[in-house]
Length: 512
Image (cartoon, rainbow, N blue to C red; front, top):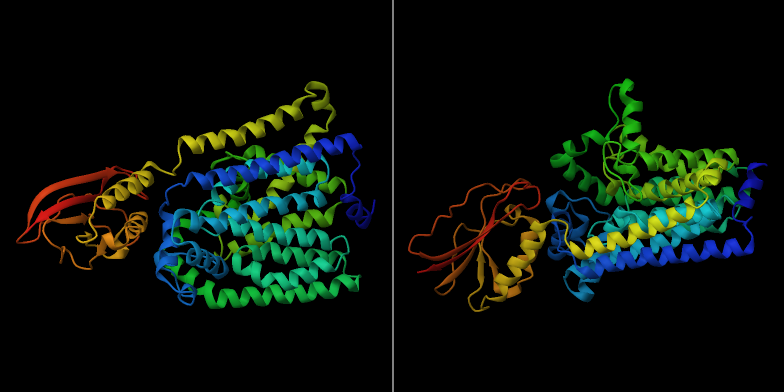
């Protein structure tokens, strides 16, 4: 079969009507489950943890124009994402639900459009497996409920790949849509540029003889390149330099080794780690099974001569790796910075799983294995929902911070507010976020001691904490001259980068 014939037949279903209906039913159930898992986690209202608070604090204290400047706390986030977040908070106020609304909607839309993508590239059972894997995968669910741009990375990449897959069927309209929509999608995600380029270059090369496709492909390429160049020049460059100045060493292990002898072992270890944690996985080979399915998916497309689809799915990996070689963008290491690769991983894993289940060996030894795996994936999704209900927080420190500060502020009289005497950069971001939710009941002083208020004064004391560092173990605040300590309540637990239990803050009551 020629490549063109393979492309045209990819979306046609060879399955009998009854089986096709069953596949659609199961797919629909997994789509419902995936959307429900994201909404469930969103509704549980996890307390903001440090990385989320980093972004949320920038949103609260900056205007739309100021969000284009280097962000506080060395954060990197695309401007379109920041503006959407800012718009939502202006409409609904600053709350956990408001700052997570954009990621939640992006996560659900990404799942729905992924189904459309899977039907093109992996029709039949393979599309069901791919949708099921993405629907119950831990990281896409988690990042759909976090104040970070990872969910928009996934959404933008799915949309780019969908347009590219449509274009491979010799349809010029998706390429025109790419040209029009790429400025918006590029503003929502930095790494989605890798999938955007793949979505244009692969159809352009494969259908280079077709002028109806080649011309809009060239226009789309120019639109994508210009959009990324402007976005990176105006926003990304300063953010990346700002972040690298402080945290470059954090990503060292995610860049290819300088010694070429170690390159392929590093590549295998990376792909068997968190990069491929779908539906679950971990570092140090914890995602080896998914990597095997991924490789089987590559073989499945290759044996059917669906090379254009295969190149479309693999090109984002190659382009990301090219960016990692000079240290411009991490490759693997963490699933959160590789959400733009999740569609390709889940699709190829779904194809690989379908390939294994079609073999004679599986049919003879365990013909019901497919049903068992469906039920196992469904149970995995329900298990994640149960886990989130039993533990509706990332760490106990996040939950203790929220509950302690909310309880503390509720007892404060706005006429004699709680006084905080640390510079903003020396306060753990989640602590600062919840203190700022106190409104006029909380006053921040730049000095070392409380400066105002009628006696007795409620003093929110924080131990020294260098910007970006851990809280020190110091536990003895110096009482200001002329004041007497009436009571002291210490709050001791691990928080953020602190792995050990320390005094994170204290509530002191002082009398003049």
